[in-house]
Length: 491
Image (cartoon, rainbow, N blue to C red; front, side):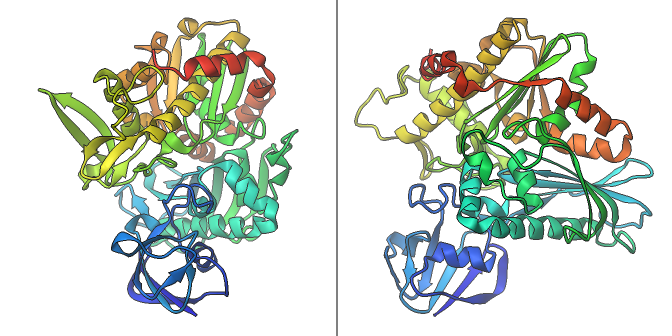
């Protein structure tokens, strides 16, 4: 059977691939290298892998309204022509010029569970020449690290490696285009521990069960040839634990948190919420299973922080107003928009302190067009926000502090760019004691990797951070479950 599909990264003439007997469309996409969302990992729960059947028919699940079908449940019954969503492939440039020869180029790479960022700099001057970002192509195997680890435990580490390796190679090739002959001198990589394992084709399966043991945590160095990348050398920044990775280490050093005579807190609200608190010469850190809600996954109309995602909701003169990333037509809602939506629902009395709709007959809070927030979306947000704020409180207590004692709070990652702080306080995502102390810090993981390219002492500082860090295992602390259940509620 021939499966032809178009759209996404496949423009122009439709591409064709063979389908094996009994396999789902999602499995065909994985083999063919098509990049698209499947936050639940193909379990049939999220519905984000829907595609449009233009020609042909499927078993397992037949096309519904408009020819749409869940690709993880649809099995081809014959030749098909399929339309892939535009968001199936995304690459976004900073818009800086990519032309002009340089003698020594360096690449900084931040591999997030959801998004990959690559930045090229002139290592002689430190000038940033361009930055590219793209949705992590491994997301077709699930939205969070545990989904990826689960795939690896099925003996498919190689598949995950080939996905991220090919994507990173493509981004680097684009950044090096028209830069002159030869490879980049050096690539520095910051990422969470699972992504670092998959980037190096290392099986992360042991991190999927107690005692969550990674194969490596220390910094590593490779030749570009070893990883089939167009660079001379590759350096991986060190991690602290299985779920507190090099992305946090990179951010702590970049922000120089330990060089200030004050307590400070770094929060990265990704699918695996990582938090680090510096106080009196020690770093206390933890990870919280926030889930993918704050990155738009697992939400009925959710999407990543890409063009068309609703990232701000306000009310003016009684009317709701929305803003989207880059002003594009609204296509869904990202984490920042979700926080605003829930805050507005609380303000208007649409939901009560438990998160339930006050009007039991109201199933959806409409935002615009067909985009809205349902009860399951609110619940997913509650689980995420409770994990984050409970982790913050336990970390503070471990350091002998209260939230009010923390002098400075850094909010990192894509969510930090768009988050409305008042909405975060209103929904209980962040303690109200943090008001007027928050610094939105952007992608500190990428910024740290960039700094490492030009700062000889950066790696030594990373090693020092690891040495002075203490991991607080939240699951082993009975008080965490008490905090979690208390913080599920809205005040």
